[in-house]
Image 1 (tube, helix red, strand yellow):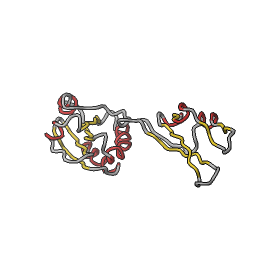
Image 2 (image 1 turned 45 degrees about the vertical axis):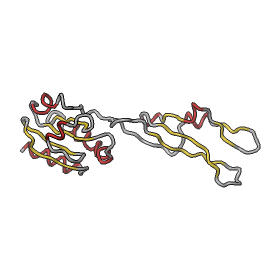
Image 3 (image 1 turned 90 degrees about the horizontal axis):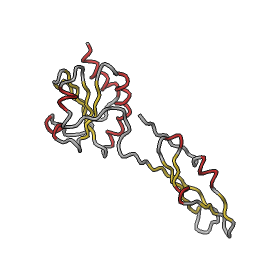
Image 4 (image 1 turned 30 degrees about the vertical axis):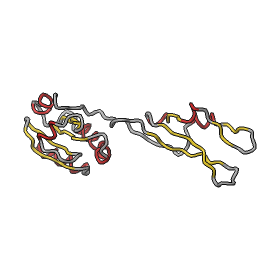
Amino acid sequence: MAAFTCTSRPPISLRSEMRIVASSSPTVSLSTRQMFSVLPESGGLRTRVSLSSVSKNSRVSRLRRGVICEAQETATGIPIVDDTTWESLVLKADEPVLVDFWAPWCGPCKMIDPIVNELAQQYTGKVKFYKLNTDDSPATPSKYGVRSIPTFMIFVNGEKKDTIIGAVPKTTLASSIDKFFQ
């Protein structure tokens, strides 16, 4: 899983390339290439730098930073299942399967994604984890009555055994999974 981190300072490449331009008021000159810079420690997160005056009559400018996330989908190691692969990957699986029904626009889905990734690592070899994008594969969620996301379903021997709805704590998901190992 890719973990994104932010920094409160401009990236090193940006700090070293800023220069004061000799003119009537001190300003910072940035080329187009310097306006957006990839933070090396953040795996693809970009920083946008802009100037703003502290006050209308002030000759002092302040550097402002903003963060832009270019990730289109959640970065995860959990395999994707869709309507066409549902039967072979979920219903015919030899071990229990947890399916995460999600969508890229869903805030709670993004919020719980790191927890699901941790559980997938924790239960490696015991439970198979899959993600199903409800926008790309609407037939399967409809068949199983998924009305809100995130929804997690646990299947054992092709049969739905449990459903968890919403961004729940890690302990809730873990206890639902653990019920099938007793």
